[in-house]
Length: 59
Image (cartoon, rainbow, N blue to C red; front, side):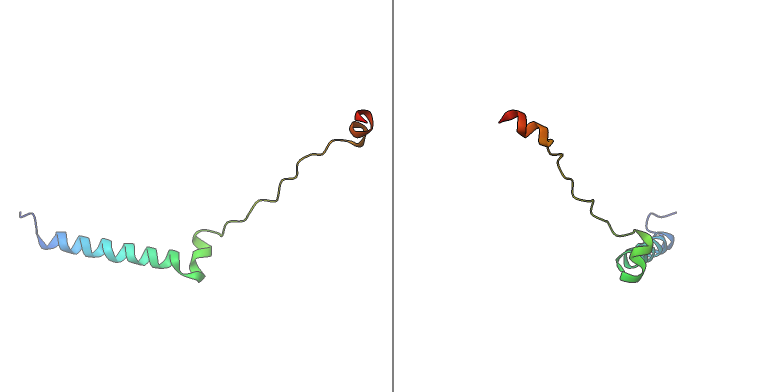
């Protein structure tokens, strides 16, 4: 059994074609949303403000 047998080349070809198909499917606009949904930004965080009583005591 030699190192560079035809089986080696055939397995590389099958792996290359399979990987190319998966990359193409992941980058396609129609299929990409089904494989990984688009990210959604979180709502803006608003800092809690001091109550009005705080301002009247300080003055």
